[in-house]
Amino acid sequence: MIYSKESGPFALIIFGGSGDLSYQKIYPALYDIAEKGHLPEDYAIIATGRKYTQEEFYNFFEHSLTSDNRHHKHSVENAIFKSLEKHMYFYQGDNTDPNFYTGLSKYLDKLVKEGLPCGNRLFYAGVPQSLYQTVFANIKKSRLNKSPCGWARVVIEKPIGEDEASAKKLDKIITSTFTEDQIFRLDHYLGKETLENVLVFRFKNNIFEPMLNGNNLDHIQITSSEDFSIAKRGKFYNATGALKDVGQNHILQMLAIATMEQPKDDSDEAMIGERIKLVKSLTANPKDIVYGQYAAGVVHGKDAIAYRQEASVPKDSQTDTFFAMKVNVNNERFKNVPVYIRAGKQMAMWLTEISYVFKGKDPYRNVLTIRVQPNEGIAVKLFTKKPGLEIKVEPTYMQFCYKHYFPGEAFDAYEKLVQDVFAGRHTFFNISKEVEAQWRFIDSLSKNRTPTRFYKAGSWGPKEAFALIEKDGRKWLEPYPAFCQI
Ligand code: BG6
Image (cartoon, rainbow, N blue to C red):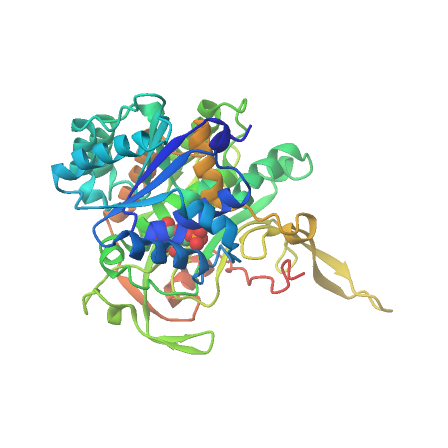
């Protein structure tokens, strides 16, 4: 069943409809859904914000589809664009003003009078969390959270809060307006095909799973490097830093999916329960975390400025744009398998991968790598005899590539997750207990913070990050250059 189509008419109300999240993620996802014919006949997308008139908004929306988006290389078909645009409205106003909500409620009634069948109501909270108190209280006060003829649901985005205590506070705010089954806490990494496939790869193939444990594995590595800067997000980013921007959420999700036990069934409780159990089992020595910040350098041949020179960043900022850490998974299966993680901005290349490194005498260690992006796929490093008279052993790779088996079938995380919201499916969303467990782990590290080290833009991070793994007699893996380059 295509829920976004078959669950009937809806109004999608986007708070922050002129913001970066809408531009980068929500509008492209809506276009993809429309392109596949997965929208019902009657629906309205009401973007709200202060900035735009209706006309300006249409330009913004169109531009969001044609902008240079790493995950969305769109060719925009005019007919699809026009059909979507016909259902899109911009409701201009200041969401800190209570009148905005009474006005919005009237606006929805007006759309119904003009022919939009009354139906489900989905709110997308794409605004800074400092506004949640105002926004949610007003949604409740104006009874917008009650759809007269269908369900009402809300999507909120990571990171929720900045530590466990603030996450709990935010949760109180949200749950006083919406019930748990109405709330969808979105971390888009949970919607990435390549990560969801890790579960299928591990639990539906009997070859590898029995080997993924301390008897066979030496360690695990997770790399999430980006070859771009913080762009115009200085204000948000400087208050957040890499560990909280991606560590508390995307990285911990990847780690959970890579190491959790098989859920006993497909239910939300079982799946989410195993993820939480795993996060709760994590420990790390705060000394085993390196924070980094990019200095000026060269990325892919182009000069790049230092983080401290970026707009809205103080010249003496200590904020981390990189971190590397060693984590222990304290369960039976992985208790002797350390996990080394590194993530950052303005690094040598764009790469997200999880690698299981098997025991063996260096350099003869087999590696199973799950490439989350780009050139998505799975590869196993094998040692092979080079053809010839002598026995010469060379590293080679056996690989599965999405591009090969599923050409043209890219499926964006937001496209999937938005449809999960329509289906009322929580499996790949967080519950508050999961978010709190993630924060508890991160908070335990943040308390005894090591100093921020500097690395050149375009490099693989500060030298201390190399020392972190090398002191254990191990090395960061070199990315395999030909990975799914087909
Ligand atoms: C976002 C972070 O949640 O995820 C960004 O705020 C980061 O800083 C982005 O760049 C990465 O997502 P993706 O899907 O591009 O890997």
